[in-house]
Image (cartoon, rainbow, N blue to C red; front, side, top):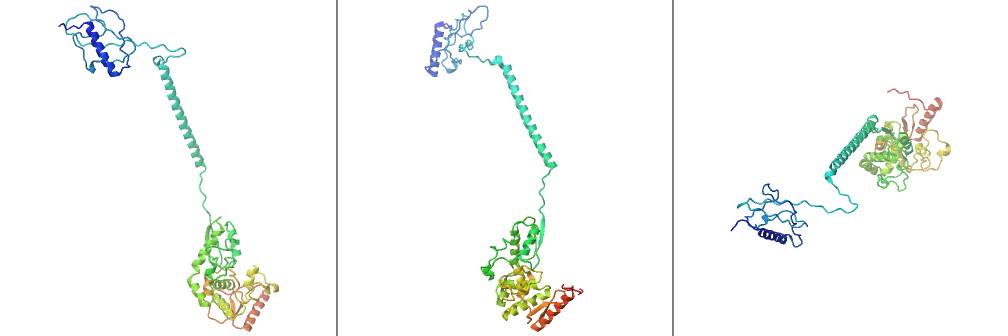
Length: 407
């Protein structure tokens, strides 16, 4: 049998391959396009058209199928090959015919990247440069803003002011009204009198004080307090009450019980001692006089209690004032005044808790002006001591003589 295949056999092999390809791809796939007309093959010049092997039978494997994508062009019919003898080389893949694009609708414009490539690349370069410039502007702006802020802070550094601390020195025996003046003078803010009326830190009933007690007089412990300028005066009240609780505790409770009085009454006695005794030696003696008179149901006859009510601590009292009906007038009322008349310190509290064991009932200021009191058990002796004091005042032009003791 001749190894050369006829044109009809090649056509049938091609159609068989096409049929199998369509079965695999689906019934809707269009047939292969026909080959375009071309020049005849020459016996002398080598042909550029695909060469088919006439001696190789049709391959039924999928590898033998053409790999080009089918189009709507008519199927390509290869030109017959001249007889050149047996054993031709394997055929080369068929060259696809040029695809003719469909005409564009009227008014449309075909984009040709190969024609506008330079312009597109130029646009991209311009966009990249614009982006870089924008980033540089933002960075330089941020650096400039930071430099301005840094220079502003360097030129005017904000150093927090150092809080100023003030020492508020409250002397023993000062009243609530006098402490209020100190608090205002030393730079505390707000009212002192209002928070020093009542406080949850002090329970009046716990100390035996009446529920009608008007204010915290006697509980406002005198001491030196360090506070910031501008701090609220209520803070000072709170610190005073805390100091009071530290200095008035179980020992004073026991002593008040032994003396037959309440803790609040012991505090009242201490407040009177703070006003009456000018030197430490006299504190326990003044306490003894107070308790002795209370025991005998005598009036105390102490003018400092009336001065507290009148807020007069320096000028002489008038006859009308000495006979007033004030509950703080211990010339006309027996017993202790209704509230403390000052805020006593530790020494006065201890003196009230531990009075001297003496029988004195009277005392009057000494005529030498050194501050000590002259004590006596009888009224006659008291009158003599009082006359000596008045005489010394008269000789000194109505003023208390200056103390001439040395050491």
